Length: 348
Image (cartoon, rainbow, N blue to C red; front, side, top):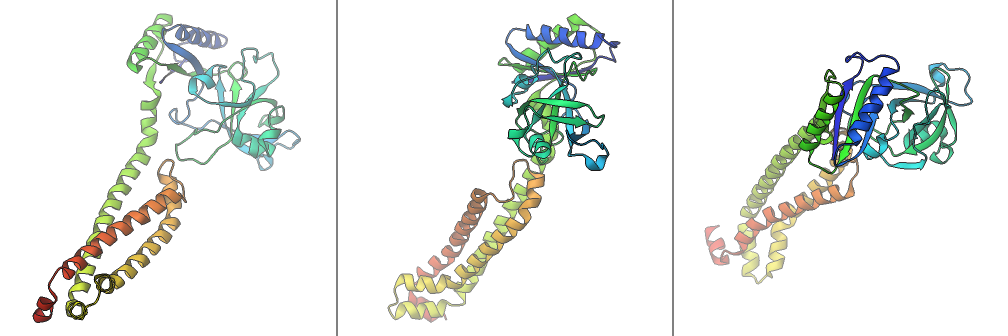
């Protein structure tokens, strides 16, 4: 479980060198709370902070830094060395940022895997390489982390770079506290600890999960709405199939009675009764599968983790609808076969 809190140190009156000193004090104080496993700092929390902090980046050999020559436009985050551990972000290769990456050290960055592909052509070529930011400063890539979601939950993979907070200082402070204890208990301890450092700090404290609820709300509502519409569509389909099968069988009762009177096998009569319904059911299933594949790209942009061509989902939907259609077709046919042929011929 992770707890996030946000404060802007400028609003509390901190300026210049006082900002990084206070950030270090906060990290050290929170790390001392019982049950806290790690504490990390970032200037803008992905998904929940709002706004977009991005920068054009250029290949190291580029000298003309016009926007048209940029290799990519990347998210930019300033972080403390402990942030990746606190946020649960996996370091794939290279090293993490350290407190030695300060303003007097060479400029370094940790990038995500998509950044490596976009700017360096391959993750293998990224660590140890260099790129330039929009000011023309060369940055040395010292590590690479897994891709994540930075602006919204349904976005495609985006390039992102993480800079040492001491080389890219900021007063906007999001701290992530990872703990195995109860969230309410940790949140209360976080508030109490920070108030003891400075009672004037403007604080916003929340759990990571609750903070993501706002980002997930549109996807959840879309999934619920589509689920309700899908259920209603399935009910209408089954009702229509049942009515069509019942009507088709009712119009052929005399024929079915004659077949049974002449000694036709039950399975032959059943095949004759259900043949047209089965053909329509197969045609409808095939058409639905094709339309589902065509429209699934739209669904993938609306619902989180939905993929355009998920074979398990597509197969499951077709099989479920086919099964419901078979049951709806079978019932009227079985009713007709259960009637005495003499009664069918006399009624007709």
